[in-house]
Image 1 (tube, rainbow, N blue to C red):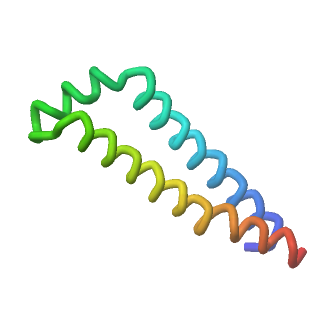
Image 2: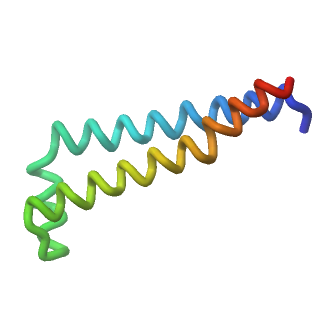
Length: 80
């Protein structure tokens, strides 16, 4: 794999990951109550616990995107 292919791979990886992140955020904001009711059937979660778990999940996913997609993309751009 040459640097151009690696750049394209990392760029598309970043785009796809941020699309998933935006979808997650949109579902959490616009369908919050429905998602909470769905998950409350399976787990004994209060609204505060549900919100905290989603916030932590979004934060960890965002950190993973930056560490594994954005930073390598920047590094490849700098060396080429």
